[in-house]
Length: 242
Image 1 (cartoon, rainbow, N blue to C red):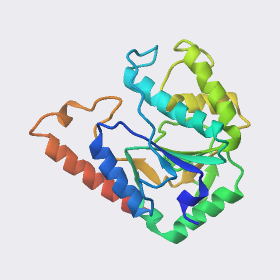
Image 2 (cartoon, rainbow, N blue to C red):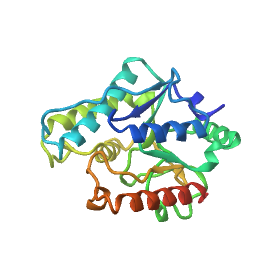
Image 3 (cartoon, rainbow, N blue to C red):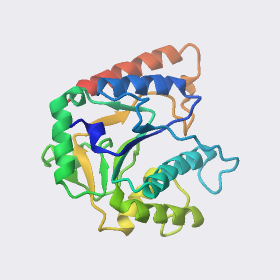
């Protein structure tokens, strides 16, 4: 069984104006045997909030709403498991192998889990753990490639809706980036089983951030080509590193 076959739906969080990211992700998914236009793949409309509503920015607010809407829809449709990707995700080359995907599916099917992060920044924190899917309870950033078990969707939606009412800095979590909200969700619900892939199987493609807007060197005519080339080299090195 391929990885996509294990999940009921694959959501892609995407801004339509980022055509560069769509093209890149389409190729990334093709490499691991997934057609971005397949019926299981859904790219929801991107919210365009006119105000920050207490979030760090309108972009952060819109991103939060995109993830939340995917959870709401999945819960409404009684899905058993969903895979969430942001449009800057790239994958290790080992995922292009059928046997690697089959082994990952077997681990998911035989493990007790509620949240599973196939992409994350953890490295030294996992030293000493066996390769595969391992429990990890500490907080970390990144939500570009993760999975949600259907059994936790209602609880997750309820908590995230609470954070939208709470003011920023609230002890139970206020209006924040989605990765921070998911970390707090796990903290306030310690019964939630979170797994991470060791090593990480996905990272974020080197590109201008849709949330932060990029650095000064991303916009200068003289530096942009050099930065783009350097990021492409870095991405390819990472793909081959496991």
